[in-house]
Image (cartoon, rainbow, N blue to C red; front, side, top):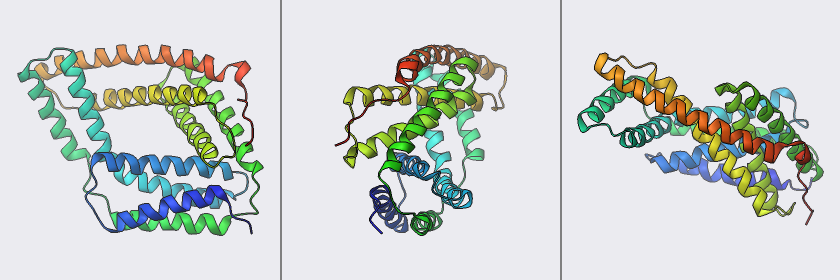
Length: 277
């Protein structure tokens, strides 16, 4: 069977990551971020095979990838939230005493909510399971399936973007962000494999939308977390100030995302035009 360029790229990246995990290092924040990006890229590639895998095969691979990402998520999410809070309290002009009060409440929350260090050996094994399951399930590769998959992903992202702008609810933006990221990763891979010629301007605009939706997601998660804190009256006033600023920023990002939705997913852009190389 001819080699499948998408699978070969995925397998190489996962094998390298699996070897690194078996060394059981204490991964820093940036390494965890890169690991989670790798899982998202791989899940984006997997969706190109949606119609060539059975439902059971697809679910097995997808769940293994999700399990690896989830095992590292809590620590990274806590660091992102801490950074957001630090930025917000600085811009809102909180006093040093107020900042200490907020940070104390956050530490208490994270000590309970953030689990122990993830099991690196289990994560490594899951990645090897993905490679084995994917390889076993491969059908005769057809280069056309890549372009068909990218178009399907675009259409899915387009539909979710329309719903998100219309509903203006966090869960809709979360799904839109996920599929926009899938589309971006698929485009970049196809370009790197020289299967398509990708206009840099289009890539830049989709990347910017992904970042905007990521910022919106981070703010929403922080907003949710603040609502779970046990606070006294003094801390309650500070939390309300933070929540008010978060709400303002979310509203601004939603408006900007609507403009991107019209630009990148409008009727005239049902399918971006790429020339084969």
